[in-house]
Image (tube, rainbow, N blue to C red; front, side, top):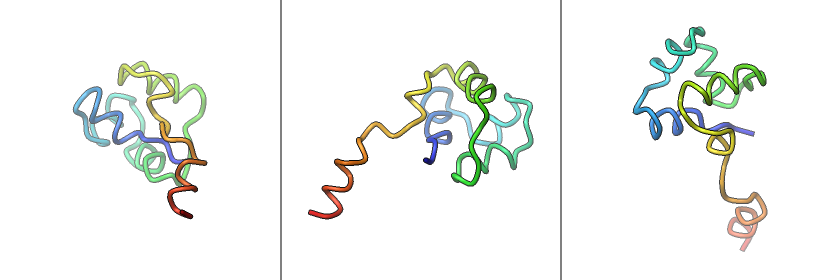
Length: 75
């Protein structure tokens, strides 16, 4: 599942992924991999991410149920 890191960083802090990586004290490539869905952050990093951005975990995930998306795509 792709996490909406880029959108959350922009919405809550007006930050780029580059700035978010610096704030998290992580390699830029790590944060870009999360944003592109190639890798997932650990629970510890997810918690740190939410603290720094000022959001909750639910803000990082899609709000529209998958079933609704499937119905739209198929219907």
